[in-house]
Amino acid sequence: MAGSVLGERFKISTWGESHGAGVGVVVDGCPAGLPLKEEDIQFFLDKRKPGETKYATPRREEDKVTILSGVFEGKTTGTPISMLVENTSQKSKDYSEIAGYYRPGHADYTFDAKYGFRDYRGGGRSSGRETIGRVAAGAVAMKILEQLGIRITAYTKQIGNLVCREEKMQPGNIEKSPLRMPDLERSAEAEEYLSNKMKEHDSAGGVIECIITGMPAGIGEPVFGKLDALLAGNMVSIGAVKGVEIGSGFAAAEKSGSENNDEFYMTPAGEIHKRTNSAGGILGGISDGDDIVIRAAFKPTPSIFRPQKTVNKKGEEIEVSIKGRHDPVIMPRAVVVVEAMAAVTVVDLLFVGMSSRIDRIKEFYMD
Image (cartoon, rainbow, N blue to C red; front, side, top):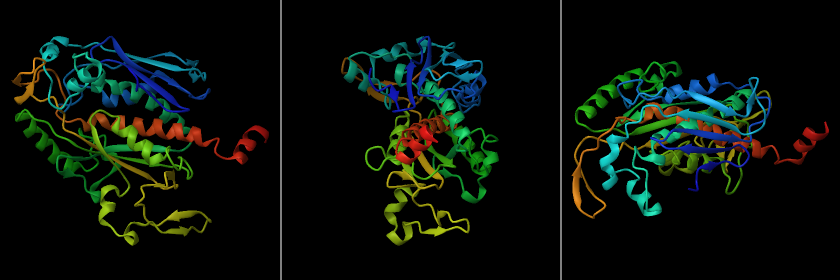
C-alpha cells in the first residue's frame, strides 16, 4: 500500500490496523538532542483515547506507547524514532458479518474496488485507530515547536448547527468540556443534542478550529509547496474530514476586495503587522507572521445502529444495522489529531525553509 508516508524533511510513516496486533509510526528527520520520553507522547495519546466519556466509543484501550528506537538517555539520537501502541481490546467478531456487504459512509466498497481484498475488522487500515500514529508523531513535532516558541491549539468549534460564540470562548474551557468546546454554554447544548442523536441511533458531525501562534513569516513555498495547500491536504487526509477553511475561508467569496484585504502597518518597534487576519496567517502560500487559522469539517460518524440500505458482495440490495463500538461524534477525540497534523506539517516546512536563503546557510556553517 502506497500513501502511508508523509513529509519531506520531517517524515512520518504510520502503520497498523484497527484489529491487528498494534498500530504505530516511524518518525525520520527529527534532530538529535531533543528531550523526549514516553510520557511526552502519552500526554497527547490520552486525549484521543477511547472510552473516556459517554460520547466516545466504549472500546477500552489503554493506548500505552512504547518508544522502540531513536531515543537514548532521554534525548533523540537523530536516527528514526519508532513508536508502538498495542491493540488489547479487539472484538473482531462484531465485524464478521460485514465481510459480505458494504457499509454506507465507509471505505468498504472503495477498498474492494482498489485492492480486491480488505480487512473488514473495524475498517482495518481506514479505521480511526490509524490516527494513533499521527498523534504520536505530532507529539514529537510539538516538542520541536515548543523549542521555537510556536504553539498549536485546537478545539471543537461546532457540533451539528451549534457553533461556539467568539465572545464566550475561553481557552481554559476546552478541557473542562467533554466535547472540548471552549464555549461551555454551547457545550451543554451540544451534549443534549448528542444525547438525542444517541437515542435515535444516529450520529453528528461538526467543525474543529486550529490556531497556530508564534509562526515566523516566510515559511512555505510559493507554488506547489504552499503552506495552506499542505495544511489543507494533510487535514483532509484525516479519515472523517470533508472540508477545510483557512482564515475567512468560504466567507471570503461573499466579500469585496476592500473588505477581505488585510491592511499592513508599522509597529513602534519597526515590525510589519496586519490590522486584520482574513488571510488566516498565510499569503501566497507563505506564512505572514500572524496566527494561522484552520477549520476542518468532520462528517458524522458513519457507523450507526439505525437501519440503512446497502448492497452485498453478491449484488443484492439489503438492509443492515451496524454492530460494534463507535463514537456518536468524532470531534472531541479528533481535536488532538488536528493538532498533530498541523504540527507535523509546520515542522516539515520549517526544516525545508532552513535552506531557502544563502545568507542563513552561511550564517549556520561559517559564523
